[in-house]
Image (cartoon, rainbow, N blue to C red; front, side, top):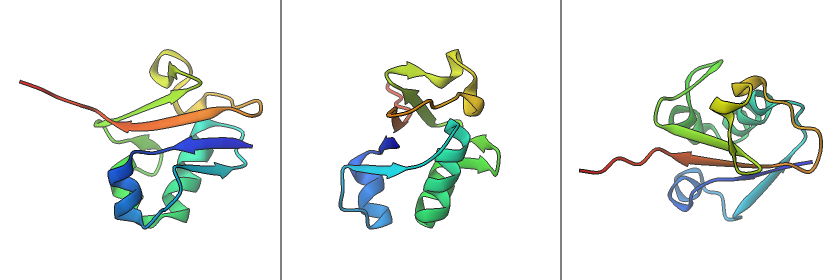
Length: 91
């Protein structure tokens, strides 16, 4: 099973009380789609299109940025942790 960690502000917006969520997925894309389907308020925060992450979202699998792996096609063998974070900007 894959563990998904999302930021507290997004958990609040989606009515999620738990820090982590668990799903069965073979790829990051499947896990993200599960998240968007299971918690519809997160869809617009995470996905720009059905098959594309929003530009302001960073996703890490076991600490590695999926942009440096295979993106949404990154495989999730077993017991992986996905962290979904909004991008931060400063000035």
